[in-house]
Image (tube, rainbow, N blue to C red; front, top):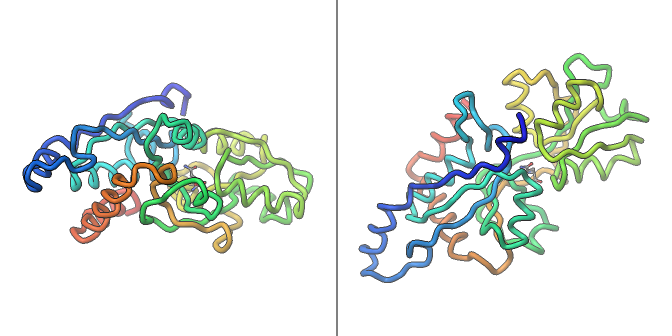
Length: 259
Ligand code: GLN
């Protein structure tokens, strides 16, 4: 994926009519979030099946569809900015985004700085190599270089075991650049979230998973906001998520991407 798709904006139009209905339903009160405010939501560039550009050039994914469905249910408007994971978090911290939806892991460290919505997906982390590689597991990484993605949970796992297994890390901003580095053989392995790597492998990215961490670095995904800010967005997301789980739309969205 080239860098040219990395700063596109996607306008969520789902909110319009529902927002009006929402206002009418509560007697004209200005419900927070239904008063014409449009939330800026930052996301990753390539993190399939959660967000990615499909073969038609459309920006799609589980996060993209969940947000659209929840916004429609709750009647809020938003703009989705595809920035990259580290850049999305930086946008949040510099007040250029109200929220991040990017397969973002809830971690104890992050909970000091951010508030999270209810989680919508359970994840873990893994290590993948080029299919057929001699590297069969962590023990084979001694003296080798692996690829990691800046600011991610899988990178935290890699960093925590780097000295024990004696490998070096090359840092990338996007998952696709990380995979390319393994495909070309510069790095012998990369670290990634398991559902994302499993999806990539199934799509034929030429890699295979040889190690998983499903304990300390496993995590649920949720939407993050700065601590104490955008509480109404968190509430609406949670209410909408509960509604679309109830209605079956949540399951439909997952099935659309995961089969
Ligand atoms: N789930 C991981 C994290 O939050 C990676 C997210 C991503 O790369 N978009 O750190």
